Structures are given as C-alpha cells and as structure tokens.
Amino acid sequence: MRPSRRLDRIPPYLFAELERKIEAQRAAGVDVISLGIGDPDMPTYPAIVEAAKVAVADPGTHRYPTNRGRREFREAVAAFYARRFGVSLDPETEVMPAIGAKECIFNLNLAFLDPGDVALASDPGYPVYTGGPTLAGAEPVLMPLEPALGFAPDLDGIPRPTLERARLMFFNYPNNPTGATVPDGFFERAVALAQRHDILAVHDNAYSETTYDGYVAPSFLATPGAKEVGVEVFSWSKGYNMTGWRCAAIVGNAQVIDSYWRLKSNVDSGLFDAIQLAGVAALQESVDAEVKAMNDVYARRRDLVCDALEAAGVHVKRPHATIYVWAPIPEGFATSAQYCEFVLERVGVVITPGGAYGRSGEGYFRISLTTPEDRLMEAVERLRGLSR
Ligand SMILES: Cc1ncc(COP(=O)(O)O)c(C=O)c1O
Image 1 (cartoon, helix red, strand yellow):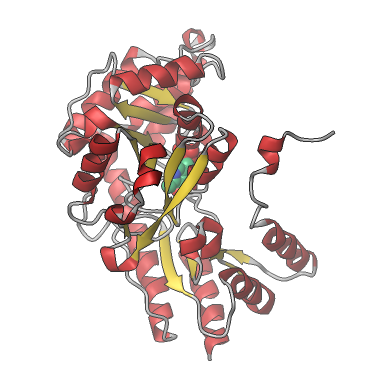
Image 2: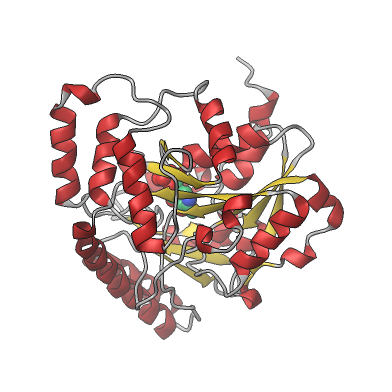
C-alpha cells in the first residue's frame, strides 16, 4: 500500500536509528540508562487519582463527552488562570479541553493553514510545530532560537515575503528542548508581530508549572493584546505527572477556539469526562504543594547533572524550569546524532541529539531529568568517565 504524498513529506524519524541501537545494546546485556524521553517518572498526585477513581465509577461520565467540555472543567481552568496567572477567561467561549497539547497543536494547523501558507516554528522546537504544517499541506519556516537573545527568535529578521504568507506562529516557554524561560519583552514583540501581519500566535505552555529556584512562569495571555491575536495551550502532562492521561486545554481567543471546535467535531469526540474531572482536581490550590515538591526533585536532579557536566568541562546554562538540561556536544563530533550514538555505544546512556529538534539544535544534546537520582548519578558518572 502506498502511503499518501502528504505522509511522504514528513522527514525520516531521527530517533529510529538510535532506537535500533538501544535495542541492540539491551539485547547484548548492556544496562542501558535512558535520559532521552521527557516523560515524568513519578506517579500522578494522589488527590488527582482519587478524583479520577470517583469519576470513573460514575456512570454519568461513561457516554460521549462534548468537544466543548464540561462546565466544571472550563470553570476550573478559568479559575486557575485567574489565580495562577492573573488572566481572566470566559469559561463559555475562551476555554476548551484538548486530548493533550500535541493533539491541539496539530489540529490548529488543520484549522488555520491552507496550501501555500506558512507556519513560523521555533527552532529547535517540539516536532509538531513542523510536522503539523507539513501534514496540513502548508510550509513550516524555522525561526532559529538565538542563544544570544536568551533563546528567543529574532522576529525582526524574518523576511517580509515569509511574513506575508505566515498564518501561524508557534513558540514555547519554558522551552523544550533548551530549558530557557521567556526573555524579557519577547511575548510583547510576538503580539506586535502577530498584530502587524495578521498571524495567529500559539503559545505552547506545556511547562509553566515545572519551575524552580523561585522562578514563576507567566502566561502569554497576561501580555496586553495577546488574547486578540492568540491562544495558549496548557497541558497537565508535565506539571502533574499526567502524560498518559492526555489532558490539556486551549485558552484565549474565542473565534480561534470556535474554529478549533468546528474542526474537532469532525475529527474526535472529545476528552473522556472522567479525565476532565481529574483535571479539575489537579488545578485546586491544595495540589500546589505536590507540584512544588516535584519541582524540588527536578531542581536537585538538575544540580546533579549540571555539576557533573561542569566538572567534565562542559559549559551548561542551568535551567530554572522544564525537565531538561541542554548542553553543547564536545569537539570532534560532526553531528549531535553521532555524539549520542557514541555515548550509547561506549557507556550505555541514552541522550537526545539536539538536531532531532531542528537545524538550530545541531551541536547540542538534551538530558531529561525524569530518571530517579541513583540512576541519574550512575549515568552522569558514566558520561564523566567518557570525557576523562
Ligand atoms: C513543548 C511541548 N509541547 C507539547 C508537548 C506534549 O504535551 P501533551 O502531553 O499535552 O500532548 C510536549 C511533550 O513533550 C512538549 O515538550
């Protein structure tokens, strides 16, 4: 069977070769430690699981949900956005559930792009920012995140013909994979650009609750004018250890949310009501302490990894948010993939090549902090041994 030309346009899966090698190492009896995937290793907090148990046992949750979402869900998100970010949302029109941020970001491409249109995608960035536009028949154009600008893109450097075709712009702070927090003034510049060129600004807010060292991540929607030009995608996955539950929300511009709803009513049948109710439980103030305790764990792991890398002569900028450390590959390797394969083969540690997140990720690797401290220590020791 020949797959569609659309699918053929998706670039080859960069992790495929790495995955084959991981399997080969494991089959050969190597104790492989994976610092690759950004999937929290700790369980969902008990209050959320308890709320889900009650909700699952209630036959009132067993039928098709509505794509618009339960009133409790929309009101809980609005209350959380007011409490946490100082952002006011109308639960009727400015909040809707999504089946994970990934689904939402992908479907926004289908809802807003036509062939010939451009989507501006942070580079390095979450792969759906480029795969989504491609599958929608449009063109992703990379916006390199400049280390000198605090890992913001140089919005003034985007050529005018590109801006004339741009309909969507994807950005994400706290940032995967660089761990950067939003540089001062970037959200304001993004609003101004979106206003000037009639672009829908999509802020991927997957990591706002995973912060430490006293850093508190803002919402894009707290920026004056943001709601007129944009939406934000909030996810429960990372902050509440809920990657498997597929719980997210799109918030912001009501017309955009209405178009997303129109699209989704043709694609899926909404988010399981019991998961919406678990999501409501997660947003209560009483859960804040669990989130804080989890973030203290990530901060300790971050120190462990960064101390070891620095001792090995690798210069890293300590992140104040996310579950990632982003570091330059040593000299002597042509590509990040080559370095990551070398590390796997020599010491059985999986790290992610920066090039997998886009051209500007080349020359870096990413370590995920979602591994228990003893295994993380062991992995870091092995890496240190390599550089001696
Ligand atoms: C930047 C970013 N956005 C979105 C996602 C996916 O979130 P979800 O689990 O809600 O689909 C991830 C997951 O790694 C991510 O790193």
